[in-house]
Length: 250
Image 1 (cartoon, rainbow, N blue to C red):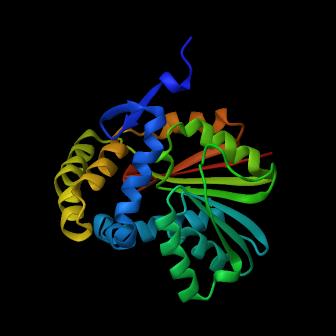
Image 2 (cartoon, rainbow, N blue to C red; image 1 turned 60 degrees about the horizontal axis):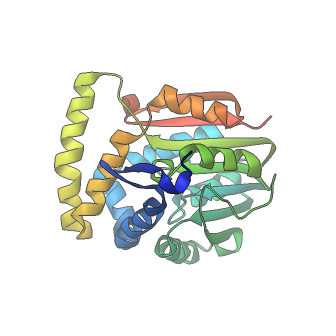
């Protein structure tokens, strides 16, 4: 029987050995780290900010909660969480050190450094004890994980009883005509934009391809439930361009 070292996975539209994906993803985000936030605004026409606000609206942070923000990059979700909660603590975990470096700079500028920790680590093997956090978030990151189900299993492990999972990710539009129009924009505009703004076409070509390879809303909902989460639900954003998935550890 084959073990995981023989297994393959997707890196965009390319099939690669599982052991190579994390390094390739790290390379993508190391390349774009300094321009990542600017590109998010340009690619989504600023709509990612509305999606993140919708995420925090549904999450409804409470004072004193401990957040683990996985694939948290430059800390955008953690900053929003702390401002909404009023008090608490956020740990930002990311595979890519250069993304964390950008986040640390932002935290210092926003005078939030005392409420944040920055940890380089793997979503499939979190360096935290069981039942350590009240909330787990991952935004536009789980599609880059080699085995997303293992990341969800780890989320369940590190959450306390009563803890909340919230995933924000690009998804699939239920209308084929709209999906076709969105694909035309994604594949023709975003890589060119990446070439001009971030001076890296290939990384943004990968990001677009990774979106198309990610499971649809119902399939991913089944994965959330398989990890052990209850009251699992999802909400489409912008007709399904992105989706929020929520679950509770009860």
